[in-house]
Amino acid sequence: AQSVTQLGSHVSVSEGALVLLRCNYSSSVPPYLFWYVQYPNQGLQLLLKYTSAATLVKGINGFEAEFKKSETSFHLTKPSAHMSDAAEYFCAVSATGNQFYFGTGTSLTVIP
Amino acid sequence: KAGVTQTPRYLIKTRGQQVTLSCSPISGHRSVSWYQQTPGQGLQFLFEYFSETQRNKGNFPGRFSGRQFSNSRSEMNVSTLELGDSALYLCASSLSPGTERKRYGYTFGSGTRLTVV
Image 1: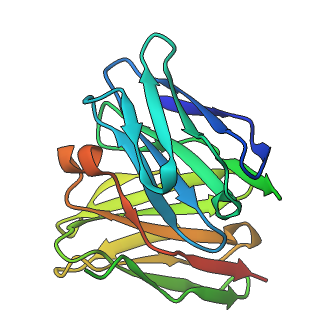
Image 2: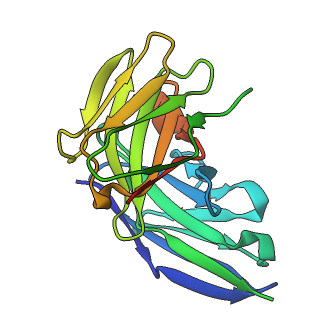
Image 3: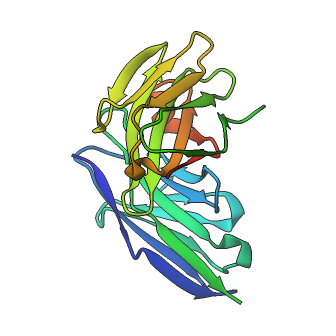
């Protein structure tokens, strides 16, 4: 079985502060991992993906994530939050089979 | 390159009616998946089509159905609408259901917001 758990359904940070969104996965085989962002009334947009190459993955808008097999984690970070980062963020895993399994999402609020 | 196009963007329907939603994938993408998104349940997989054939189906009642045409465009239909069907319906396309999707991920449309009253 494969799944992802996103810790914290709501995260608030001050503008300019570090953003850390947590994602832990469960998979019996090496996984493919993804982070997507969703702005209000929009679809999901791919931020970054891990496909078994480098463990530190850089994405769009200054985001990056590190794959840690020992911790079964794929946390999303950004050094300095911007007001435009306020959105819903989804972690997803695809390992065995072809389906994607999405987490329940983390809503990021950026406080000016 | 045009993105994934979903029409209409918004719909209001009455309980008991039926509705059809449309999705045009990115040119060259032959796999189309549908998801239902609600605040309480998150993203739930409805079904996937590839080469006009349903490849996978989620745990939804038979009122939810879909199809894919030879040009890869897909439609989903919900019959006998219930209040609980109110949701954002997202279409996601990929080159194929296999390794390419794992390597590149999905491309999502902006969704159709369905409200059942």
